[in-house]
Length: 141
Image (cartoon, rainbow, N blue to C red; front, side):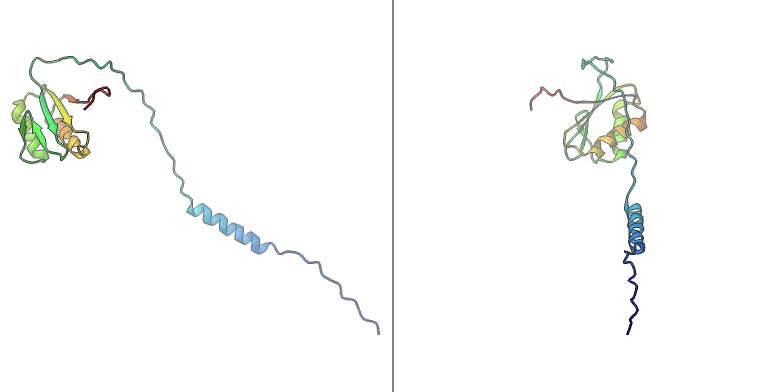
């Protein structure tokens, strides 16, 4: 008896599932990736020689801010830390003269909000000569 020989089919790897998986991974990475555009601002800062000059013969106003955010205006402690109280005290001490120099002295550990509140109060009243005190790096405590 003569048997017919069966032709053996070529064995191949089916690439369709592999391509599907690659496309799914591509979509997953495209969706899960965050695209952030970081922008940087380049500025030229002015230079100062660090010398102090007196601009006015009149005594400047000084706001001292403690580490807890309490305000002292010209050696007088304010009753609370609100913007309204600070503005009223500044108006009273300056007697309406907003051309006086205003110096803000804050402790290094003072909350940023307290300093901003003092600057905001001065700006709302109309002070134009505002300074923030600092110390030189060579000074020791």
